Length: 143
Image (cartoon, rainbow, N blue to C red; front, top):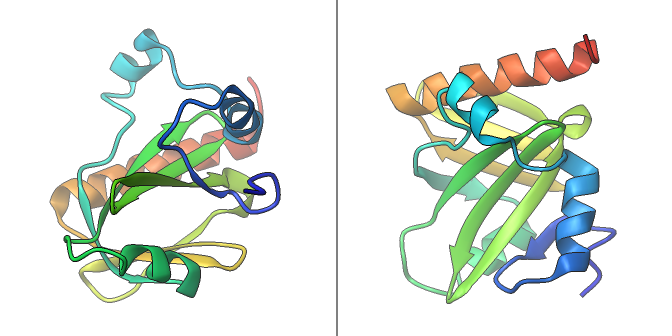
């Protein structure tokens, strides 16, 4: 698997080389102090309503509800979802991340050729606000 070009990768198994590549792209996970200060770094469970063809092909392999979650990192985000018994991650640095609020109950996330659209509720909206703040903070550079 060439996970260095496309950052849609299978993260089901412990692979130090892959973990190092992910850390280079979006930074190492926040420490406990930062997680508490930010009131958590993970999103609630989000239902996927649409996805780009490559992701859609993975999601249609099983008949489970298509859901994902997002982890905030210092330099980007990781969107994780499951298909069959495998866990996949879409690694997105903030400088490549675009997201939009489409319909009143949906958010769309874009990076290169990948797209994921998720249903929204109050908790998801609050998480997206936190993600926008983190992206803006990272764009300003170090203090």
